Length: 175
Image (cartoon, rainbow, N blue to C red; front, side, top):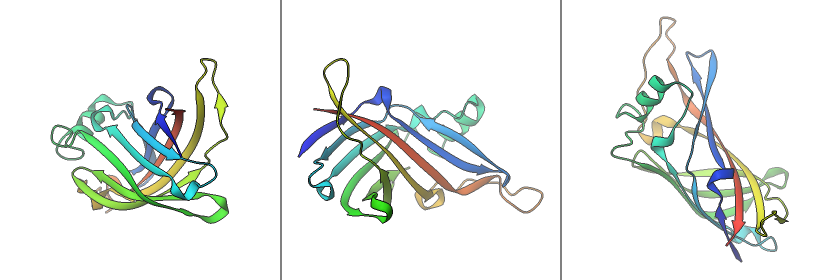
């Protein structure tokens, strides 16, 4: 079992959520850190611990980002990090790994399942490091994590959708 560190400068956490019930707004978080214990010969023994700086949210709109950092949403002054700790790994459909674990967001911890595309095979980078990568996805209901702020629009719908689609792209460096 090898330990792989998340390369923050080559990894990302993105999200997509409905706005006004007509389109998706996309954003991302910078500053994902953590490690993965992984052995290609025994992928079901994989362990993941990761953290994201909640204040690093970026939707390309400063006013919206400020609102998302406020107590209406992430309340980054009180809850500065989003964390994930795996509890088990199983074989999913289509050969994908499913990483089961606890996501802590806005001070609320809930079980989630991450679907993993990968990991890739090992590659040497130009600096002599050994790397692997993976793309991960899941969907969460933001309300389950205390992110319930919303507004009703004229048609009777809501300003912000409930389901947030998360996509995580990791570049991992062997420790």
